[in-house]
Every structure is written in structure tokens, then in C-alpha cells.
Amino acid sequence: MKNIGMIAGNGRFPFLVAEEIKKQGDRVITVALKEEADKTIEDKSDKTYWLSVGKLQKIIDALKENNVDTAVMVGQVKHAKIYSAITMDFRAMKVMGSLINKKTDTILGAVVREFEKDGIKFLPSHIYLKHLLAEKGLIVGKKLNSDESKDAEFGFKTAKGIAGLDIGQTVVVKDKSVLAVESIEGTDECIKRAFSLGGENAIVAKVAKPNQDFRFDVPVIGLNTVDTLKNNKIRAMIIEAGATLILDKDEVIDKAKKNEVTIIGF
Figure 1 (spheres, one colour):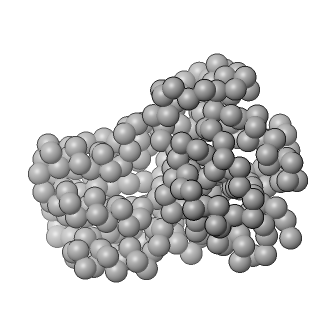
Figure 2 (cartoon, helix red, strand yellow; figure 1 turned 90 degrees about the horizontal axis):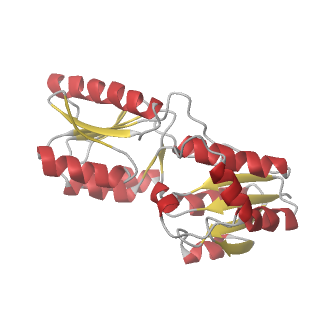
């Protein structure tokens, strides 16, 4: 039995990972990020520490106290937090001060290297949930017609280009025109903005980065995504097969079917 560290942000992701770790007979030592994590994550953890995103040294110390040498980073942490009034400790300030930019990969890559200095290795975030990765083809909903398929291909290629620049991983397109590009606001807000600009029947494309580091920032959709797609009258969502997690996959497919939402793996 090993102690597996889990740094938990918001959403369902940390709950599902904790369940899988326990199924494998290991213990879950959770650092729940105060600004993001759900209080009930304690119910899934063997030990829980509530710490701020900016308390890097305390997070590392908490894991080391429990002999953790392997950890996962799961759940969303809003990038906008770096612009909020979070108090950072000296180690976090030192890391942030050393960055050439504040892109997601730059920040998280530097943070992961700090943990490695203390002997803590991060596993790919989806390692415990590979059974929830999207498959290729129509996952749920109606097939696309010829014009819609061309939009989907256009959206997928455009999203890959944007993701390669580490701007965002989602674009919304319609009639081979880009309505919205995801940036710091996140996928849901990007979709809402696209609907306000271009109306119904747009195509959403969400992808992994060309050189995605799966230790952090894995593309994820879930039940809330289905609500956003329905409420904004999206024709279909294209996700990258083998690289995107569908959390609560069976429930997502069931809900999408009932709400006539289309999801396709490219």
C-alpha cells in the first residue's frame, strides 16, 4: 500500500481519481486547494490538508510528511487565480518571478519541477481514468451533414493551432468562421460568448495541445458541459479522441442523448 498524493482543484475529477486510487489498494493524501476544491473531497481521502494555491512550500511539506513520492494534479484551477489577491509564500513567489511568461504550461511546468526537487514525481492526470477517455467517432447524438463536417474539421485544425500557442484549447466555429477562441475565461464562457455573437448551430472543438503534458491540464468534459452545449444551442462538440476525459461518461452520454446534444471524437 502506497500513499498517493492528490492535489485537488474543483469539479468531479478529484472524486473519480480518489475512488480509483483506493480501488487499487492505495491511500489518498489530498491537498485540497482552498480556493477551488469541494469540501466533500474529505470523504474520499484518507487524509486532507486545506491549503491555498499560493502556499507551495506547505503543499510540498504536507506530502512529504506522509511519505508521498508519487502524486497527481487533478481538477480545475482557474488560470485567473494568478491575477487575484492570493497570498504566495516565498517559494511560490520565487517560482513566479523566474517565469518567462504566465502561460499555463509555463506555470505548471515550473511548479512540477519544484516538487521534483523534493522527490515528488507527478503521474499523468488521466492515468487512473483511462477508461473514460473519448473514443473516435460519434459518441452520442446526430451525425453531421457534409457542411457541418467541414466546419468540424476546420474547427479541430484551428483549435490545434491555438492550443499549440498555449492560448486555449477550445474554439467555436460556424460557416468556416471562428466565433470565439478560449483564453483565460475557460470553455463554458467561450461557448456562451460564441452564442451571443453567432447564434445557434455552431460547432465547438476542444483539443489537447500538440505536445500536451498530461501531468497537468488534461482536456475534460462532463455533465456541466452538456448543459452549456444545450443552453447555447450548439450543433455539436468535437473532442480529441484518446486525449479528452469524459467524466461520469455513462451519465454524460445519457444526458446528452435526452437533450439532443451531439459529441464526436476526432
